[in-house]
Length: 446
Image (cartoon, rainbow, N blue to C red; front, top):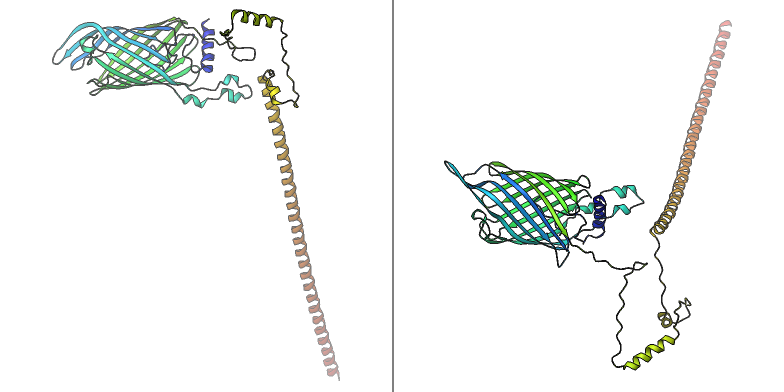
C-alpha cells in the first residue's frame, strides 16, 4: 500500500508543481533544515524528538549538557503555499560555572518558543522523461534544469518571555530565512537554508544548513547535514547523519547522531523522534467531459418578474407543444457568416499521441531520405569532378612524357649525325694520308 502511495506521490509531484499536499507524510526531521514546501491544507503535523547533548564546559557560564523534548507543529490554511508553524522545546539543562573550580546546577523549563510561517514563491517544472519513448538517451539523460532550486521564504518571531533565564535572549525578536531545495532525482534531494535569527538583539546570529537526503527504498531514507552558526563572539558547527523509517503514510520514525564543534571543544548530540500527521485534506475535483473540457454547472433559471403567474404558465405550456428546432452543421461555403454562427459547431477529438509521433516520424524519415539523396548526389558530383581532374592530370603527364621522349630522340639524332660527320671527315683524312704516302713512295722509287 505504501509503495503504491509513494509511486503516486512521485508522479503527482511531477505533474502538479504548485501542489503542496502529498499522500505520504513529508517530515523535516531528523534534520534541522526546512523544506520550502508546506504540508498542505487540512493537514495537522506533529514532529517531535527526544534529544541529548553533551560537551565539555567552557570558561565562565555554559550549558554543557541538556536532555529535552522538541515539538514542531505544522499546518496550512488560506493558501496551499502558505504554512504556519510552532517550534518549542522542553529541556533539562545543566548550567555550569567554570573558573578555578567548576560548579553546576540543573534547571528545567522551555528553552525555545517561536511562531513562524513560510511561503513557496517559486517551483520549477522538470521534464517528465517517463513520457520520452523515441530516445533511450533522452529518457535517461540528466535534466540540467534540476539545478534550479525550489525557493521559499520564512519569517517568524522568537518569544523569550516563556523561557528559562539562560535561553531568554531579550524577549521578543524576529527571524527570517531563505529556503532552497534541489530535487536532483526521485531519490536524491538537497535542501539549503540561510537564516538570520534574533534580529536586533545582542545575540543575533547568521546560520546556514545544507542537508542531503537519499531514499534507499520505499521505507528507508538517510541524510547527511552540516550546519554553521555565526554569532558575534563565537562560531558553532555541527555535522550529522541519520535515518528515517516510514511506518505508514501518516507515521515516520527517525534517529540522528551529530558532532558539535564549539570553540575548541567537540561535543555529541543524538536524537530519536517520531513524526505524525492528522490528515483532513480534501482534494478539489473538477468534472470534465469526454473531450477533457470543464463541465459548467447549469445556471438557475429565473422567471421574469414582469410576467404574471398565468403568463408564465401559458408560456411553459406553449413550449411543450412547440417543435424543437434541430441544429445541423452545414459545410456549404456559399452560406453567409451569419448563418454559420447560428449553427452548433461539432467537436472533434484530438489525435492520439501515437498518431502524432507516427506523423512526426514519417516527416522526419522523409526529411532524412531527402537529405541522404542530396548528400549522395553531392558526393557523386564531387567524385565525378575529382575523376575529371585526375584524367586531366594524366593527359598532361602523358603529354609531358611524350615531349620529353621527342626531345630526347631529337637530341640522339643530332648526336648521331654529328658522329657520322666526324667519322666521314676522319675517313677523308685517312684517305688523304694514304694518297700522300703513295705519292711519296712513287717518288722514292723513281
